[in-house]
Length: 162
Image (cartoon, rainbow, N blue to C red; front, side, top):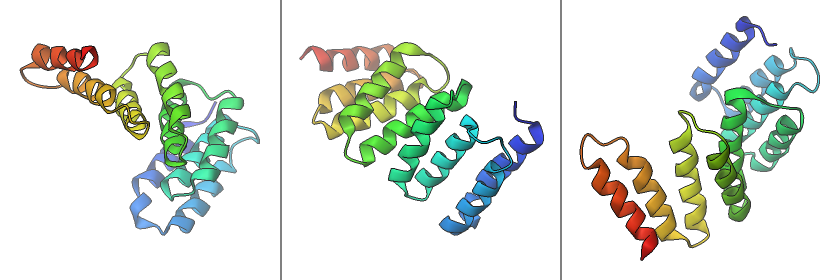
């Protein structure tokens, strides 16, 4: 279990991300993660997120895999899945991204459902599956509109029937 003081310090660091040069941010984050026990899945997740945020996608992918292998759970696991799928897409591995996000959509439902769908739509577009991507995106959007929800949802479904 990670103490709330550490959680607050990591949240505060992320809140000031734009105040740092990429390498300085990474050094600060590495310092915080070194306070956790070796092999801690949260440390791997935070390192993956940091590398992702500064454009080190290959390193990020390695840390995401380590976080999952070490047993990352809870909301961070879902966030890591979304972020890892995005990283895979950026590395030219959109098929793997689609696989990961499709499984995630079927496994869990929470406040990140539309984020999963949005990143899935991006990966589908990279694979030339534009109609499916637009259908997913419109269906997700339809739940947030003040009106026309049913109409937009029906149009989204119709895109897949054509």
